[in-house]
Image 1 (cartoon, rainbow, N blue to C red):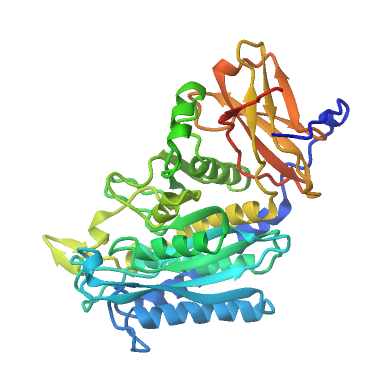
Image 2 (tube, rainbow, N blue to C red):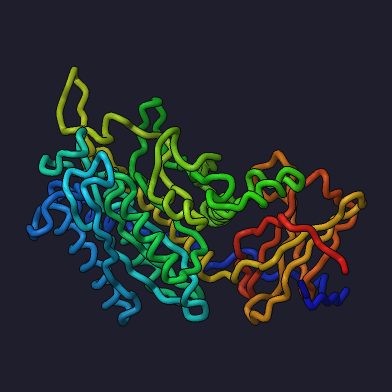
Length: 447
């Protein structure tokens, strides 16, 4: 492998670019609780959005809901001069494909792409689920308002499209409404396969599933806490990489975990009033969400959701029993909180889409040395002004130390012993935005 290695000692110590960007504060302020409330109420008005419900009616069922979502994306596009490419993506699911499939049907997703100016085939994605369910997911006729699960995530996705459509980005951003989540993650599986087959380069998918409840069954009421679920390493990684990890480490440093850390850093920088909780798990215990099918194919993906769930409002028929009111109704949604989590997504998407591409072929060396050397492939991208070299204690969840370098594709951190830390490299653009960190699993090989 030829790296075209160069080292300019003076260039390596250039001043780092700005650490904050005022546009992110504007994005945070633009997420509207009122618009989110309006959209949640509209989604509830379809009665049920069960994936196998009516597709012909204009006022009830999954068909009416997805057509309305499509029209909202088109409306946003019209307001920004046609900036969104809106289309349906669908796959046919047979009754035999799952125990929660009452009859064969088309699983239809709604996709709106804000095309990037420089990396049009590189995508940052945000998804919400269109569908809802009652206590019995096979009952596709009973009312299932799904106010929080998951009209909140779908409304947040539409609102993020409204906010971010005002800007131009280097990478593309896809805003997605997925179907079939409650019956087996069918919509996510279909779109993930579509992305793979069409050679999409997915920087990361932010799956939003329940972003509106602040009153938990654990007795906690909080409009600040939220969770970021991410699995530690890619599900489809090779056996060779698993063997390598036994000697170099990195058990919690896959691409999805780096995406979670990226979101965490964005929130800490631009929304310090929020409390992002990085959960080291694919999803809630024994459960799943629509980022999983993307993870299955090796794409970076996380789930963003409320921290304190209320199970009497999830997957329940609307009823009152023993003085307890069951059902996922509008009264269980806090619109200000949903707007905050929408802003979390928006600044994360913007950070990914304004940022540079990931550094390639990142490698590390320093065994039995009083220093650590990091190396990466030289980039010809004029937007990249330099690189951030990160390191942290192996027990730390976040990248706590960094050094900016420019004009080089290899740098040695003197006095930093490789055995005691984990390391990573992020590309830095002229505007100060960074890519997610890339963990070096491969060692530097000298000829």
